[in-house]
Length: 227
Image (cartoon, rainbow, N blue to C red; front, side, top):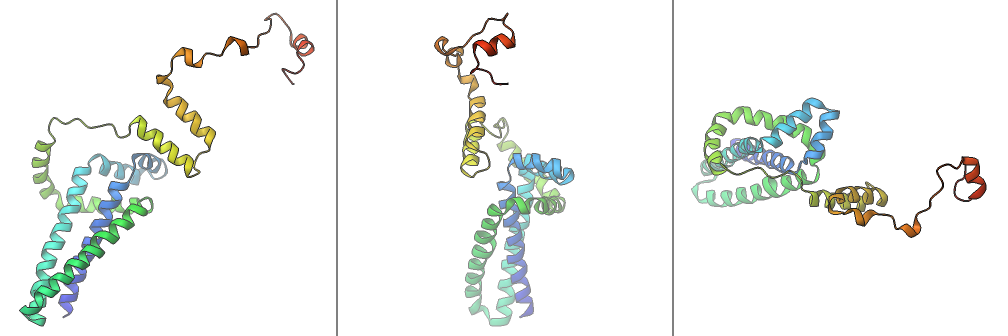
């Protein structure tokens, strides 16, 4: 009975960890990585490596997860047959399936998606360990995935439209105020503007004689400049 519980906990526990790591890694934004590199250079550099080599990192997580689920299910089923008899194996398998669904998929991935900022530094170190353990298998998988992705150019990490939407969300969340948002939007849309769009109308232009002194300006136009 103790072996049955042990195999069950190992299977669900390792799968739980893998799901959190996968969710965190996919949720991490490159802007956060850049900030982390300034605050914690080693951790930030490691996390950047995972993001830039995400095929290796994800492969390592999935390999560990698949092994845990496959061997765990087989071990739990075999042990359940010894303890309860073969007639109970089907019910144990059903229970294990739902346990993995909730405790190794839904719950951990939700946690990873919500708390990815807090978990990212630790996740980067654990994923590095996973990559070391599974590297021979990763090399084999890369032979296949590299052929699939051959000739495909990497897309830009962030487009201008995505940057604008991110800025608007930051304004709604109170991270930046409305004026700052307007300034950023105007700068990003500057290449869409022509000179005629930003010219000041002649009717509202105020001009002074260049030879006038400050004293003369203050005497002639006291409401224009206040020193």
